[in-house]
Structure formats: C-alpha cells, structure tokens
Length: 100
Image (cartoon, rainbow, N blue to C red):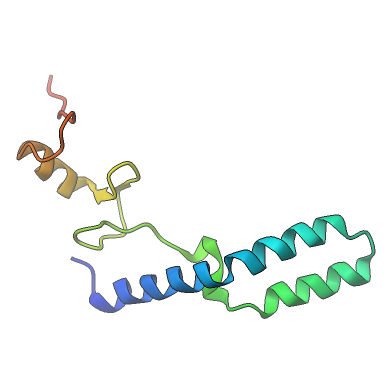
C-alpha cells in the first residue's frame, strides 16, 4: 500500500494537468507555426511560467486499489499482484493465468 500523501500528490498533479492541458497544447502548436525567434522565445517563456506539476510527463500511473506505482497494467489499472489475485478469484472475466 502506497503512502496516502503520495497518492494525494498524484491526484493534485492530475488536476493541474487537466487545468493547464489546453493552454499547454495551444502554446505548443502556436510555437510550431511561428517563424520568428523572438515570438518563439515569448511562447517558451509562457510555457515555462506554467506550474511544473501540470506537465503530463510528471504523472505516474498508479494501481487503482493499492496506489502502488510499479508494475501497473494499463488495460486493468491494477498492479501485477492485485491483478493476479483477482484472476485467481475469477473477478476478471476472460483473463487466465498461464501455467506450464
């Protein structure tokens, strides 16, 4: 189980990313269209003035149940050991554990 403070920090980052998503995307598209270096510098300064935690690269995928940041499967949103437990308990239809 992950620390509650880390989970809350990640939720805060997600909210910031959603808040500044359109501004960031529009600025990047505008920077590509502009040809003069001065205008590109101004747009870069505008991008750098946004909060760091609003960048999508700062987000980390976490397990839906435990909040663990490691070994997450995108399809299920679960970490590997929770996924295995759920498959063994037949809670995920269509998923099987390989055995040989």
